[in-house]
Amino acid sequence: MTLFAPLLGIFALIMAIITKEQILQALGNVEEPDLKKDLVTLNMIQDVHIEGMKVSFSVILTTPACPLKAMIENACRNAILHFISKEAEVHINMTSRVTSQKNTGVPGVKNIIAVASGKGGVGKSTVAVNLALGLAKTGAKVGLIDADIYGPSIPIMFGLENARPKASQVDGKTRIEPIKKYGVKLLSIGFFTDPNQPVPWRGPMVSTAVKQLFNDADWGELDYLVVDLPPGTGDIHITVTQSFPVTGAVIVTTPQNVALADAKKGIGMFMMNAINVPVLGIVENMSYFTPAELPENKYYIFGQGGGKKLADQLEVPFLGEIPLVKSISDSGDAGTPIVLDEDNIMAKAFVGMAKKVAQQVAICNANAINVEKL
Image (tube, rainbow, N blue to C red; front, side, top):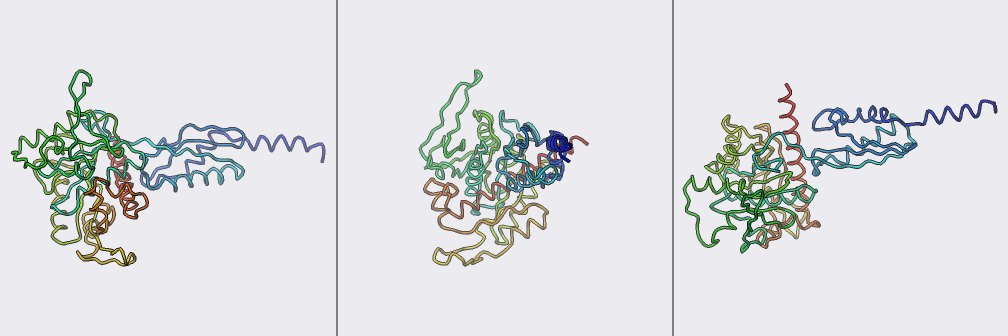
């Protein structure tokens, strides 16, 4: 028995050697939940290193805002332990590379996300601002355009009422430098006009001004450029969607029937053949009221579940409910949007919404690429 002991030891050592092929084969059992393919096929596994029983590799997610990040990481670790060895020491580097399906027409910008509403007064700009900041908090590079020419609100919501962008020379051309605050690059027509004076512009002038916010700015490298559109379905919507390949649109509504009817028309506009912009989902704002002294109570003062029903009816994603809370409007008026307050439960709600939007962008991009391959 002692004669075979050294041979058995050598055999055990050989069997314990982990190969790159084994790792990729094991990770081939891990499916990306949204894209419905395994991580190896999607080329999401990179930088595989092996040192004895120590295994390390990177998982390249489609967005830093991926809401399934922890689940994918656990699935990868379990795959190695289950299919290769329970003794393996696994280190996973979860990183990301934001996808893009097409040239947006704006140098350096990967995705354009339009935020729209069928009518005014539903909190569209509040959602747009907190969406942009929520994406930035996850590590994405984000810009925000205030395309609501007649009622720009971004300067107030970022505390930049008196700010004026600078100009710089880029490749021999004069470019506007977006103002950066809270990690987001910003441009608004409100930076160039008197806040106390109306903007009595006709359609062609408005369209030209909106295009300049895209074309004449030095946006640099951005994963997402969020565009706060005006209410309704007008010139600016057509200008943006026909001049720049928009990745998708987020529709904001409230639970009332009149708001839902207008939101349905807004979604219909994006689905028209002449526009054909994917709807990333519906956000229901002012869903319910919770008084500060009764935090467990929910009062559905504008109706209940309308946004979810509309999403189901039109077969588009429902991105979540945002309650009617005074601190949301107060923080916007103060120039410090609610999502910046990490301890606030509303901040977590907006970050969750931002992750869902990023998730839908990745799905849209993957679907578009798959269609092109057919």
